Image 1 (tube, rainbow, N blue to C red):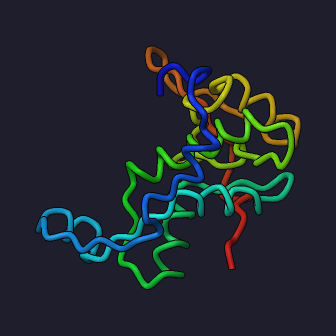
Image 2: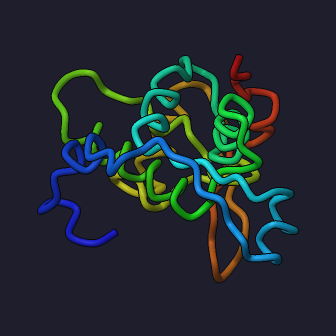
Length: 158
């Protein structure tokens, strides 16, 4: 995202645009890739789930997507909008004085830190290390950061 300091992410988070909603997709490649045609969208729900992740635990965007699909009888949730919703939740929390969301506990696939969060991976790394996680660096040219053994710290959604 660009110009984060000029956007009202809390307004974006609460602008539901008639969501949550289902969309039936017809693209055969997508149906094959995701294993069905019922896709679920729910922007503010990401923030609500992210608030439930306790100190010392983490979750991935993919695990949240799986939870939403299962809970709502959908085949899948759309991954690109999921990434956008998670970023909006993070920035909305950053802009609030109260009712913070511990967004730093929500990771990308394979335990990767999210460079699109407020303060980028540096700030997320600091917050996760303060909770006892070990952050590892991978890559030489395209450096990425991951929570070591993140699977051991995954929060299970009920």
